[in-house]
Structure formats: C-alpha cells, structure tokens
Amino acid sequence: MDEQPILTAKNLTKFYGSQTGCLNVSMAVYRSEILALVGESGSGKSTVLNILYGQITPDSGSVLYWDCRNRTVDIHASTEAQRRSLARTELGFVHQNPLDGLNLNVSAGANVAERLLSGGERSYRRARLESRNWLEKVEINPNRLDDRPGLYSGGMRQRLQIAKNLVTGPRLVFLDEPTGGLDLSVQARLLDLIRRLQAELGLAAVLVTHDLGVARLLSQRILVMKDGQIVESGLTDRVLDDPREPYTQLLVSSTLQV
Amino acid sequence: MTLDQMSSLAKSSQSHKPNSPNDEVLAAVGLGKTFTLHLTGPTKICALEGVDLKVGSGVCLGLTGPSGSGKSSLLRCLYGNYHLSSGDVFIKHKESTVSLSKAGDRLILEIRTWSLGYVSQFLRVIPRVPTIDIVSEPLLALGQPQKQAAKAAARVLERLRIPKKLWPLPPATFSGGEKQRVNLARVFVKNWPILLLDEPTASLDSKNRDSVFELITEAKQEGSAIVGVFHDLDFLSRVADQTIRLAPPVQNSISQRP
Image (cartoon, rainbow over all chains, first blue to last red):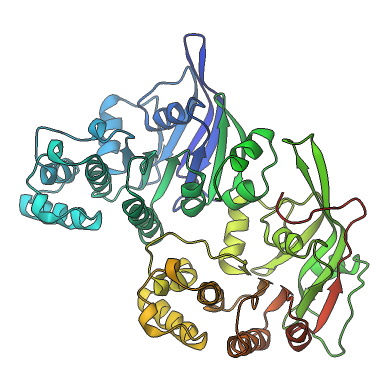
C-alpha cells in the first residue's frame, strides 16, 4: 500500500541542556487515523507533540506536512506567518492546560468564533451560530455562551478548548492529554466526538496520553516512548495485548484492565 | 506464490467433510507463538507450535482441544492481534494474497475493515455510545450512509433479540448475554469474506444460540470462511464442516494472555 501520509517526522532530536527531550523520533500520520503516543511523564511525549506542531524547534530532524492542496510544508523551515495560517485552518492543538489554549479576556462564544473568523468566516452571525452549535456538541449549555472562560470549571474549559480547535474543521489535531482532568462521563462523550469526526470528516489526530484505556478505545496505532525514544510501536490492540518490550510489558501490566 | 500453492505446503491434519469448496481464503503455515515475559525472568511461554490450517469460502473450521491448547491465541494470531513468532498467515484480500507477517499496520487495518471480521469474548466500546451506533460502525467504516447502516444494524439486533427499547442505550448496563449479542451483532451486520469467532455462544440461551447458528449458516452461504472456537460440542458439530484439534505445545503451560 503506497499511501500518502498527512504528516511525517524524521529523526527528531531535542536536548534541554544535558537532558534528552527526544532522540531520533520518526513517525508518519495518515488521514483519518488516530495515533497514540504513550509513556510515563517525562518520556518526551509532549516534546514530540510540540515539535510536530512547530512550537518547539528540534535540534535536528524535520517535520513535513501535506496540506489540503497536497503541497508539502516543511514545518520548521516555514515562516512564522505560514505556520500561523496553518494553525488557524488545518491544524489544531489541544493543550493539557486549557488556559494555554483559551483567550480569557473574551467570552466563551467569542473564543470559538474568533478562530472561525480568523480562519476566513466573514459573517459574525454565522460564526456565533456555529459557536453555539459546537458548545452543544461538547455539552456546554449554550446559555453560558457569553460567560468568560475564567468563570468555567476546569472540565468545561477543556471542552471549550476542544470546541475552539475543532470548529474550523481541521485536518489534523494534536491532543495533549485532552481528557486528563475531565469527569469520566464527559471524557466518554469527547472520545465519541473525536471518533465521529475521524469517521465522518477524515480527521487525523496525534494523541498524547498516559491512559492506556483511552489509547485503546481511540487510536488505531500506538507509539510507546521511554527516555525520549520510541521503544515499541504498532497496531494499538497488538501492542497492548502482546507487548514485546520490557518497558511496554511493565506499562501494560501496571494498568488496571485496559 | 498463490494461496493455493502456499497452503498445499501445509501438512494439514484437518478432517474434511466431503464436497467442501476448495478456494482457500485463509491459511496458516507452520504458525508458532511464543511469549517472552520480561518481568518474570524472562520466562518463555510457548502457546502454539507448527500449526497448519486452511479454510475455503463457505466453510466453517472448528478449533478443538483442551483448555490451554491455544485456541484463542490462534484466533488472535490469525487476526493480527498477536505477533507471529514463526510461520505465517496468508489472507485473501481484494483479489490478492497478503502475508500477515510482512503486512504493515495500515494494511492490516484495511484488511480488518473489509475482509477479516473477529468476534472476541469481550465487548470493548467507548462508553455512552448508543447500541445502535456501535452496531452500525463497521458499515460506516466502509463509507455506507448513516441511514442505511442503522437499518442493517436494526435488522441484526432484532434477529439477536435485543429489545428495541435498548437500542438507543449504551450497552454498559446490559446483562452478559445481551453484551455478547451486541458484540455479535456488530460483526454480523455485514458480510465478511473471513470471520473469526471466539466462543460466540458462551453465555447465550438456546433460542439465541439458534439465532447465532442461523447467522453463521447464512454467512457460510454468502461465502464466508469461518474459523471458530465453540466450547459447546453440540453447537460445534452443527456448524463446523471441518475441525482441527490443537494439542498443548510441549513446553507450554499457559496459552491465554501473557
């Protein structure tokens, strides 16, 4: 199968002083797939995710993205303006801490609408309607549309951040522990939402999580990281049911029924 | 090499009923599976050794053998859920024959979407997703419209006697037998060229066993090649055209999940 990936990373390496952020990490992400990146905290998952998105510059290695017109974009060789334009339209990034991804000075509705308007939507009315729509999809009561996110609970902020990222119909989203602080019922709803978008719109996602249960339900393929390196990778069900590396076996056996 | 030539290499101990069709769609040649458990030792556990089998369209092959002889492990190897330690599995997929040991992850996922179905003993689904949507999913994955998929899902749920009022509910609170029937419905909602069944009737009453018998019989008539583990010997003799008996490998003690 000669399939065109939507994103590839080659030999990503990043040091923080003498500390290893990540070492020789390579991967490909395909359309309509969810790729999970798992491992303990400090294993380099978030570093890799931020390099893929262009927020951290690697010491060496490259990230290539194929945009909606099938043009190749070298993420770390492109200008800040190019990166921002991609980030507004085709890419999304859901931060572990929702405050990093939200504008606290405007209302929740405006947070969502803002992204739509900067992505090219001209009608404010349509943007507002679409924002309301998305708040409903993530189970936020639309009568909270005009509240500022500062007044939201942690879980609501996270849902708002996810709505904000998905409203422009991105092709690829980076999810950094997106369901970490959420109630189980809301977490389930979000997992379902992401799966639906994947099936209906062909959304691709790179999901960083330490929850192997979430990885199993959501992802088709998985990369296991330890000390900045990928130690095992493959089909999610295969890696979790038949782990071969000592570290993966430890990870799987330390988890309550996944 | 074609699949026919491939499987003629297999020294099969299968017992054949006469008149079974002969265009093989699934074959295992010298298949072996050994788990290496790094956390204890390392310990090596041999679950399967030198297994040969071949299955043709419209034929149901039953796996027999004492508990611990590797029946479920064999199904998992055939599905690509377990790595193969030795030997290979050949699967007919879209007019070509794929070697499972050489197939990449993306190809295996495609084979699982189109050609190879599997009913496990557990229902693993995203919480809060309605039963009818869970059962529709394999058809949506093929790109069928929602409405048509839901119609097919309703038909199979009805045949498996899941009361209509349960369809909009997620199966989390269902009884063991109901969950198993949802699991079966999700696979029997479409025709599979190859179908793997792991104890599909384990917790079903006789009426529902009969329904499963009918579904299997119809699948065979539609040309499915089926490999199944049936602990119920009466059921086995009703559905299986051929059987293969697995003996525990010599140094084997455990053959379930590592």
